[in-house]
Image: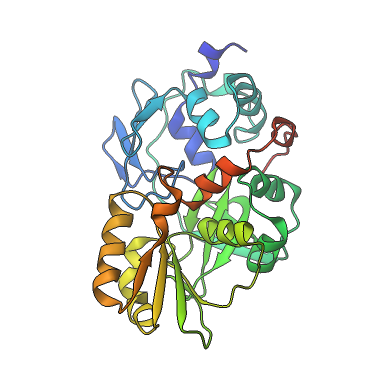
Length: 293
């Protein structure tokens, strides 16, 4: 099937098959939290009529194939092959000309939690340059269902007892809360997302650094963690190099006695995982195994 035919597959249907739903739906377009990065305000627009997308946070956009190339960090040919293999277990041709129905958010129901062993998830983490030993030490494999359909993802526990969930096609959570690792330490490290935390562990080659740890899981959770963070003698922040990250760092600087903003060390990259990936590029054959999530 050629690119023109594949790009007729509705981006909205592609997202829905991955459990990704619009934060706002205006009928002819939807606003999504971008699956390409940590996005705390919905900044990806999908035009349903033209079947095109744009990420206002980065200025990038295009067709469905362009989107899959960005999400899976592969070339156009591989994106086309993956689309035909992975879209909801159905052929692309079965969706051409289909009028997508409006999508409503569905709750995530966790079915089981087990040690991280899925080859598809391990491949995903490898593609993001994450050390697998560190991932296994701090994450689990979470199986869940949404609207009667089953999925699984890398799960990172938060303080509400819920899970932050990530796989190639989905970024979400079962509850909104930060994750704290408390210890009798004078220092505290603050990360925006758990992929950044795993990236730090990968870079330092130390699965248990001698610091208190706070993973916000979203800068909107800062108020829930700021008192604990500020109780430390020295705080190091590893937040995103965007407006939201800079604002959160500024709020922390006002609350903390001694704060060091570490984002300067991974500019011009958006976050710590992007920086790690630039140092440890993934070889193409790691991405070509075609295992379905």
